[in-house]
Length: 134
Image 1 (cartoon, rainbow, N blue to C red):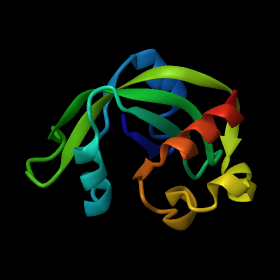
Image 2: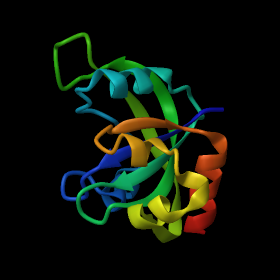
Image 3: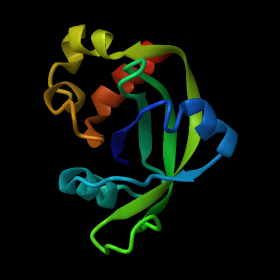
């Protein structure tokens, strides 16, 4: 199993809306590295959902329910989406500040490549953030 983190600005698409929808395709990725991370996602992989700009916190866990396919919001074949479904809402959101000050999370892509919207996580990074959220 692989682990990832995806970012969404809550005013555009929030964790609450994601839970109401029950499933969504993850679109709008226009960065090659982030796109390649979407392509690496396999059905069943787990994904942390991060509210960017407002909140700056990990709020829950989702899972990949469909592997990458053409992004339906563009005709450009370079861009892809995956389908995600919510799994678990954290009892306590895990803030970016908490992540930055945690000695186990110093090398996490969220800290090193802050602008990247889809990033892989090591299993221990994923587990640590889940533990902090619960």
